[in-house]
Length: 112
Image 1 (spheres, rainbow, N blue to C red):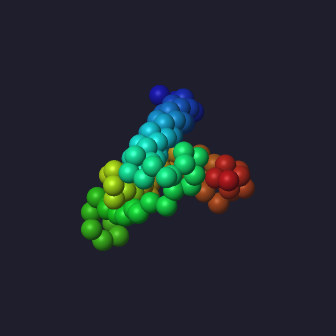
Image 2: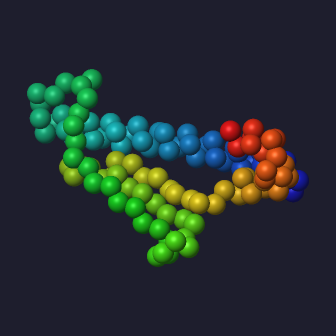
């Protein structure tokens, strides 16, 4: 597969992943809001809610050698609110650095 075609596919998959993440975040946020309003009927629907959460993250391996990890925001009442995958490796960045030369102006513009 040509590198431009591959990069286009990677970009498409990343965008679809962001869309699904956003939808899941909306569902989680609505579930937390509904549970809090059921628990305390004095809360208004559009009000900003103060909730108690815990954050935890873990990496695939101990030490500083792991490239993959995950972070979770956990609501005390309802459970997980948000999950974020963490990565220190980006294949598109590596390919672009190779093709555009890492220290070039073009790469810095691409990197944004």
